[in-house]
Amino acid sequence: MKKLKYILPILFVITLFTSCSSDDDDPVIINETEGLTKVQEFTNATHTIEVYTKTGKFYSGYNDISLRIKNNTDDTYFENYTINWMPIMQMPSMSHSCPKSGISKVENMDTLYQGYLVFQMTNEDESGWSIKFMYNIDDTDYMAESNIAVKQTARQNVTTFMGSDETRYIISLVEPMNPEIAINNMKATLHKMETMMSFPVVEDYTITLDPRMPSMGNHTSPNNTDLTFNTSENKYNGDLSLTMTGYWVLNLKLLNQNNEVLKGETITEDTIQSTLYLEIEF
Image (tube, rainbow, N blue to C red; front, top):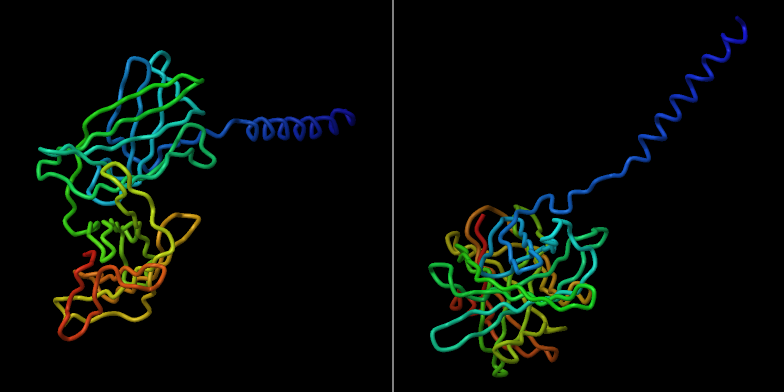
């Protein structure tokens, strides 16, 4: 009986340890599309490209876009492929593309890829845009294409303009998407139009920032900083100070590498708004 008395606790400990080890070895299942909503599917005979955004819609201006490719035969998702896209806006007498990033695999994800598009305009009925995906799986090329709906935002979050250097530029607001009464991290993209289909990123310029509230005597706010180029993100970063809720005009000036003003004006008593601006309301 004495031997059994000591053996039983030992067996209990071994069983408990084995049970815990088994639980720890269970695979952790990650929902790669958590926090995202599917916007649309692009389908061909063999594959379906699922396209996601946070809102489940495309909007004028900057759009962070995630996607994954499904095998139509067995409903599994591919993990390794190369993919590119070509957005097209079809107008009555012409067509053009828009600023876009490359598409790359999301870090620590198996199937999810990500990039961004900047829709610089849209029709009132949300029509006009399409996206063509060109991708390669196991050394075989594929394509999928479809029209999309692009909604117009209530406030101006993207602006297209001609600079004094006779170059057409596009500035789009990236952050803040959810502004707060605080110093907000502001991000923007800056592209130029080389051709109707090519819109490369413009590096190492400066975007000056002067936020104003037109309904409150056009007052500004303290502790704003101008936007400068961030190489790792290919975007422009600065500080946007918002001291109260309401409608704000983000007055901008675009300066080239020689600090020459390409567009925009300094706000004075006589100049209450720059011709280069974005808007926020919260």
